[in-house]
Image (cartoon, rainbow, N blue to C red; front, top):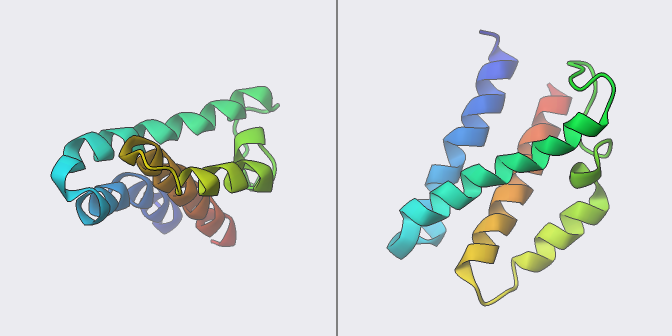
Length: 104
């Protein structure tokens, strides 16, 4: 396993647990599951050909990985509902992780 793959997947799966405990301590298990479910934004990769290209940066390329999507995810952060805030954090972290992957 390469360093890039290790960083990418540990950031996708370990950090949401940290965020869930930090921001949603009372309901951290549910928040963690919601944040893991935000991985489904990667379904937009199915719209691309090829579906997976290891040399392509997904940030800015796929529809749910654009600046417009990020603005929407950021707006969700300001809702009064913890569930939507956990979606927001999960999606924003997902984009951050994918961007880090692009830098590596």
